[in-house]
Amino acid sequence: MAGAVIRWAGFAAAVLLAVGSYAAGALPGGDPGADLRRLGLDATPVSFQIGLAACVLGLVGLVVAWWRLGAMVRAGTVGAPALAVTGVLWALPLVVAAPLGSRDVYSYACQGWLFANGADPYSLSPAAGGCPWVDAVAPVWQDATAPYGPVAIALAAAAAWLGGGLLVSVGALRLVAVAGVVLAAVALPRLARACGVEPTRATWLGVCTPLVAVHAIAGAHHDALVAGLVVAGLAAATTRRPLGPVSWIQALGAGLLLGLAVAVKVTAVVALPFAVLLVAGAARRWLLAGAAGSAFAATSLAAGLGFGWVAAVSGTTDQTQWTSLPTGVGMSVGYVLRGFGAGAGADDAVLVARVAGLALLALVLLGLAASAWRRRVDTRAVVLRCGAALAALALLSPVFYPWYALTALAVLAAAAEAPARRWLAITTGALTFLILPNGLGVATLTKLPGAFLDLALVVAVAWIWLPRTREPAGRLLRRLIPVR
Image (cartoon, rainbow, N blue to C red; front, side, top):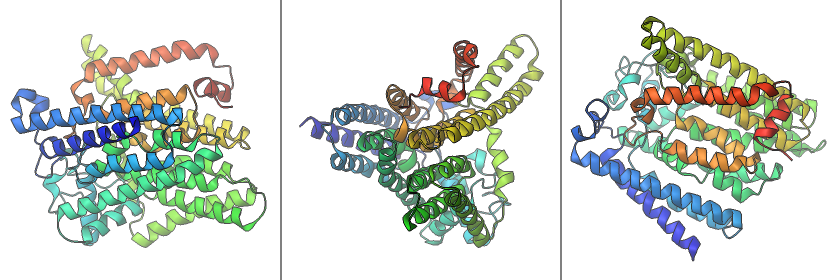
């Protein structure tokens, strides 16, 4: 009885969120809350205010229902079939909602339109290429070229090729995102079992979440497909059979899946070394790595686009928001410099902090890879370090948006245990509120306090952990996320 109440309460919250999206979401006709940042809520239309209230209430209701559902999953009163039904029920209203939290799906549609019409989206922006839907694209991206891999561009082109205008293309791209979520939902239980984690708990934490509902399904981000391909690739790689044709097929399949993930967003390459370690035998490891490289090269050649996305990736760092930890630290230093009359160095502070963040990221990734190599016979340890690497990539990159965490959270859900799982759940819920329905980031409205929050966090972590830097990386990681 309690399970049914929670299921339908979450559905009602999702319906409220979907209804509100048509007044306060990222609508193709323009931003209904365009004056919110500059003039405040009173300057926005009443319809937007009502829609925003509906979205906020719906989102709060969905998060509360999800949290209560998690308690029932942990208690064993909700099994895998009931969780699947609940997840589908909560997702249905958002499949037909207006885009929420971002206008990126319109960028995808324009990039696909350019490619479908013989243009190179790595060389031409939506505005320069004459995309008929350019007005729906966020102003900051109208003159930006595509930073995505050939698979993402090809799928967007297929969506544009269907005809029927922008809404049909957006609907097709949303179905691609849904396919990514379904793939993750199918593969995550297998990965969790290989790690010794109860599959239903992993699915609740990694797939059946408000973050996935809002930013993977309603937002239709490419990251949803990346998450599905990465989780499926890792699940296929988790074989310890030393002999037999099945292990070879699994290694080949894992490599192809991960190669396709990289061909959607290059950041997925971080998962590849860990997937290699999951496979038994040197020959199978080489097969997995070769299959991944071949899949990426083949899709690049088939699309005929080359590697133009490399230059476009650097353009995504133009946004300065404290949701990126290094950027936030640089912003806080810049505010201090301005206070002392040295405002000219404020931008340099952000640049230096970002470079330091990338250097730290490289060290963290190397440390996690080395730690995984030492524990390569332990599936859970390797998957856990893969999730930590993906999380570090999201946190230490120059720019961070909530949907960047989808892949990391899905992988960590398969390997983490309490108390880390509780913190992951809290993080998942908090990330859902980080961007307003129309795409305006809360970080944009809270630059100064957010920047100093980042600085305080870095100081606190340094104070706690620096005296322990002599400990091996694996032991430090186990302090944060225990591994049996």
